[in-house]
Image 1: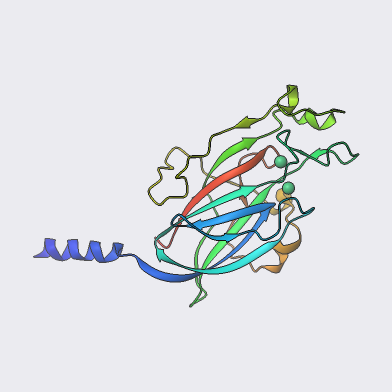
Image 2: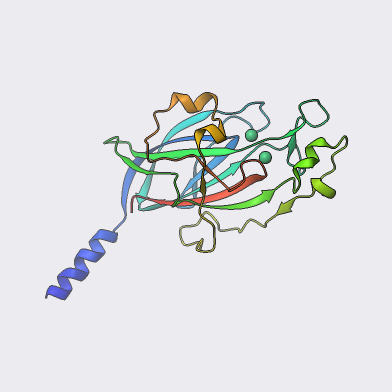
Length: 213
Ligand SMILES: [Ca+2]
Ligand SMILES: [Ca+2]
């Protein structure tokens, strides 16, 4: 009898329950958020908008616990990883991201990006920072070479195996220099600024975290 009760309690603890979740997110420069494999939010400001450092807030309904998947992209003009190519501002731009997930009814924090978040870098460029000094930078050549990883079709799925993915790296606000929309959100202190290890050369990231466990 005690065994049966224990099993019943364990099952009850794992029964999914739908909740309204509010997400606040700021990404330098662009993002899409998925919950349990479905898109719930896409950055409405195009990545080609100069200085697209907007923060966005949305509310969605999802069964908890939920797998959140975020595609995050730092802007790059092409696969060299550079921006402002051919101008006197030609440079390797940097990225950065923070997100928090709150119970829309109670306002209680459910999860934030932190060291538990996993992020796979799928575009790294340029391989050498001196690419930014080249008069005619060509993607794939010399310091302007790039590294690309195939994106698994099912990477947003609940049952996708991310056990091999690295943990996100936590970065300080002074290293990321978050601008504009970031200051409009009241961030919970347990939500951290994250990215790959390299704020400049890690350009496209696939990140996953579980909320409401
Ligand atoms: Ca950027
Ligand atoms: Ca970059």
